[in-house]
Image 1 (cartoon, rainbow, N blue to C red):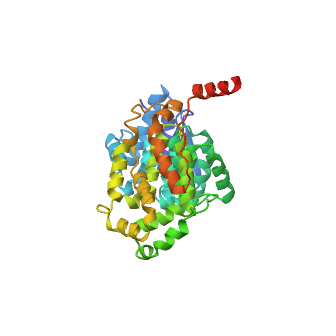
Image 2 (tube, rainbow, N blue to C red; image 1 turned 120 degrees about the vertical axis):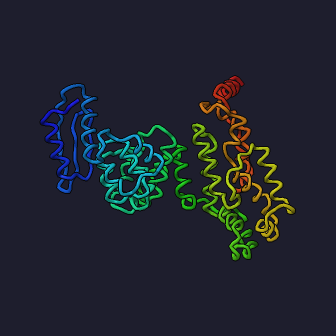
Image 3 (cartoon, helix red, strand yellow; image 1 turned 90 degrees about the horizontal axis):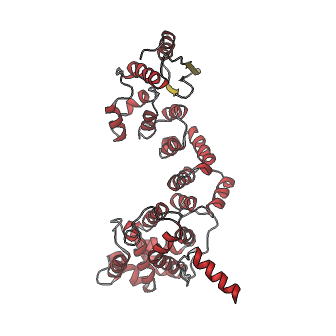
Length: 396
């Protein structure tokens, strides 16, 4: 389809003025161009079907920018998705008026503050805000605060738990949120486990309202002074876990594990636990079922098999053996625990909690042991079971 002579002329004038970025509003049939002087626009007058006309507009723009009339070329789609787009090509991507080209640009490690500003003008949405806040250069720029504000305002409308968690993690990790809004977000996290998980991922050692250290934290720390001075990573992790920040972390994690809204949140919580205790298992996720994980941890803690840094801690503070065993188990949680008891990823609600109880219950016991709490988390009851017990009490 050929463009009308008027649209062809006005679009060529727009391109001749060397815009910094181009945005196409396909529903309103308007092409916008960003320049140092502000925003220019070309209102289109289609000579046929709007979809085909927009395609012709993109071909004109692509031919001018890339020398290729095919719109956003297939080979560029492949390159940008694989992260192979050169940094010097990012400016061109923002001139194509293609949403996928903008997404490729904002995800590039070579994105600069200026290019990020242009990309945000071209396509404001939560996904792009999250991608750009992963870039340290963008976070420290003036745009960083704009992106944080956008994610905060959009957060109540987010429907996917993984995106909620990512938004909270990036908002907090940016350091661009004030105390009042952080406190408000923490209050909401009490009702939304996906938010709480974002706190655990972003600021595990600086959570609001810290708990007291475990009663014997100072005693164990004193016993481990020589190992701490020698930078024994196991000793440092043990001190971190038993201290105020670690106890706050474990309490919050216990809340997340109690009734996760879906399996995505549970899997992310397991990832978070592995990351927290990574020093005790540097080899990463063992993908073991619970019984295998417990057996492996018991072998690992045995004096004849334990690594040197573990034996040194056990020699200095023998009473910490149960703690190191619990930490080793928690360092290995992953999908291997879920797979044997819950193979259907769509299972939700009370049925999911009941099936996960044989896995989550023992983990909660280990967390409670590290917290010095002598109680286990009861297995979730179905609504029908709870209703039966309530009726029984009333009948009595």
